[in-house]
Length: 450
Image (cartoon, rainbow, N blue to C red):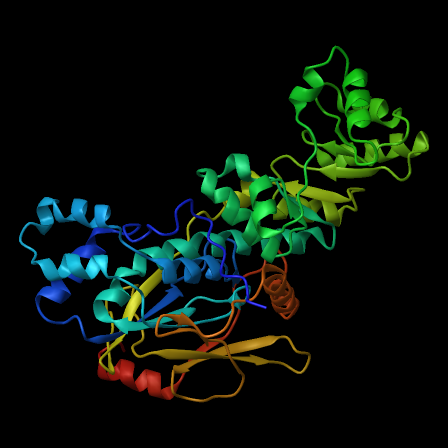
């Protein structure tokens, strides 16, 4: 059986070459002009610091990043337009010929998608001719940063829900339609049970989940008529939104439907108080089997509060807080040159210093199997623990088929279960040990880091 290729979520994955910053092209042109286009470079992608309220991150987006990297092309029309820009008026033809002929033929090492990661350690390494390794910086950062941000937020929400299903309702709140695809996929990796995004569900095989909007209720003369009509159209799968007018009156209207509806949805007000009162009404009317679903600006802190107070809520829908990672909407993901022609390269800018040389990360576990700390070494060193970076691409071709979405989800679940207890609560403080090998420290000293 031929394995499925990596799934692209772009409308035209064959014309992604110019999805980059201009300075990547000017540097590429410069390297070619001065004869440095055969220098062998190692660039590494890592996170400088944790965002607000985060003590770990979930690495996501690798399938799309790698699949689209291997499809990266410049069309003839794109190259001709770039050629006409004033900044390139003095550039000789070999640069434009290189753009038209571009195919990524380098190597990529990466931690597996769904892995729990921490700042200061290599997540992905690119080894290629210098112009090519440089060109792909913007594309890789943008392909991996946002999915990692959302997967990390989703993992916190899933943890706070303590086993109750959580669904992605974020498509309408995303920063553009494309964000809905990425958020649906990333949240599913981190443990969400499904998504309301129809095309993401169709393309990726994620369970689709949705209810109704308030406009359905408003389209009828009475709430009871709206509920009855919806239940007739969708028998046996009905979830009714009960807060268009008066929430508790809506609960009573929903409870009167025959046969019984599957669930009610609370989307406004205090979900703690309303869930208690709604459960009491449903039980009073003999609707013990009807579930309560809550949504409406929920995040991990509010969900944790509801769980802590034993709110009778069976599942949650999360939209805005998930798809925007509202409390921490940016990630300090960077891509830096660490080695050129086998010699270490370093950055010494204050607060932006880097370690030289291509690297490996080894993860240790304690006697219970929980993560105990990470040790960063030169790529050719060995150390105790599990090496996290594995070869993904060699000479422009996949080393092996990338894992499917459910396999990534299973890996992520195992990773999250291996977190120390102290890192699991929404209010946890950063407290995870990361160390560097003597060889790395010595090379850093030689280049002036310390």
